[in-house]
Image 1: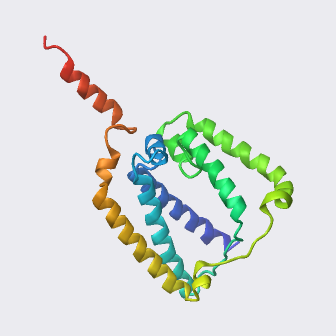
Image 2: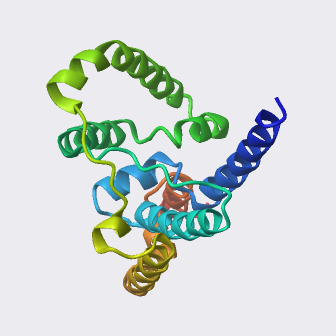
Length: 205
């Protein structure tokens, strides 16, 4: 019981931080998500790359200090490719992903309730279909860490990976600043832009 309470507290704290960052970055908004899928803006990609770099460094520090052990998942290439395509299609159609649905509900997007219901239904269906999928598609694969392939310590790989991501983010921001990517055609700004344009066209009384 004593080990469960710290885990719950840590989970709540991480959830609050994640939710705050998600709301401030506007990544939870359907317009931003669909815009990323259509390659009209890259805010979502920038946030995800930042999360990867940060997560790699934090995990390396926690692993180096002995607080956590690396637990790699099996490399299932076919399942990852097919599942990624299905998930991507669903995200593009719904304008939401599993991590943003609850944030959308909290922000007042009522259609996100249907996305949540569909996600829960999909999880139930997968739980029953998993035995068949394990034999036909998912199977098993090697458990690899990318640094094992390079023959270097994980902490060194995390630093190199994070440094490379920072360079990419800097270049992306130089070419496509996030304020320009937010634009006036995404949720939160479209209505105000529409009102402004029509107010200029309205005849003076």
